Length: 249
Image 1 (tube, rainbow, N blue to C red):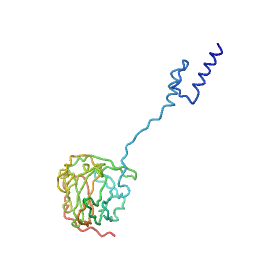
Image 2: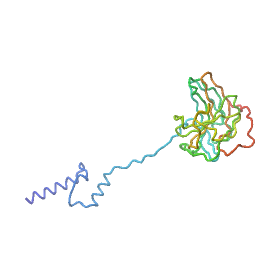
Image 3: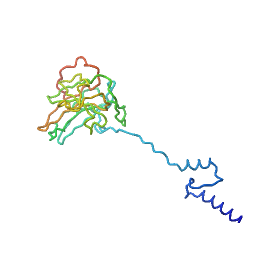
């Protein structure tokens, strides 16, 4: 009988040390609390840390970096609508936004007038190649828009939240007259072409842009330069009529 008890205890100890049986499945009176805690810690899975990221959707068409307090971020270009063309000036290749960035081309006609061409900027982004565009809430009264050229094509200024590309309720626009000027936030809504949209109410934004809207009937030619796109409390003195865009092959 004594031999049988010894063999039973030995088998129990061998089972506890077996790698095929989890430690928390073994109950042994001789095992102390510290030992159980050490084994449990060793076998516990490593927690997964989830980090939310917002990659730059315009990283492949990124231009110079712009700092115009309180906004800072990279400029970018984009076009939509099959057949829409866009050519950008050499100043787009500069490291910093020190000269006007000009775009020209034609916005193709689409059945739903969804074609467009634009030059924009991220408004809260660090100056490094892998920096994602972040959002911010505007704290001034509106935007200062300065345009050179225009070639009689209609222009809109637009701001958008991070999901503004796919969510029409997360982008707000306003018409840009002539060479631009100060445009208060009260002029922005989600359907600025007829004023039927929702008014902008100081929601957070991640980008601002100048765009040429397309038509359902015929292509829209455009040729203009962006001189400034910035948050502002009022008009900038001396901003008058625009002149023709500079030559840039």
